[in-house]
Length: 113
Image (tube, rainbow, N blue to C red; front, top):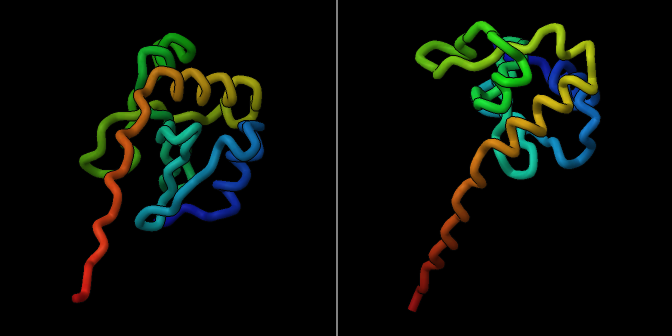
């Protein structure tokens, strides 16, 4: 079941991070990006936080859930959606704990001589 755009917009609004938090649709589901880092996934209208030590420290002993079959376990956020300050704190801490993605290689142009 694909996620609904309305749920994605709700999560982004609840986070209160403005344009720093954006999303990209992938195979009917969504990835959330904060400052260029994938911090969470939205699958089946549920929010899954990428697992980091910083996120675990804030959440405590959170159960692991799989956002889709054969995926790595993530922290599923439920109650945190209703507490925007907490959601924002978790997303920021997770982004800070993740490395920046490697820069994209420039595309080669074809020369037609």
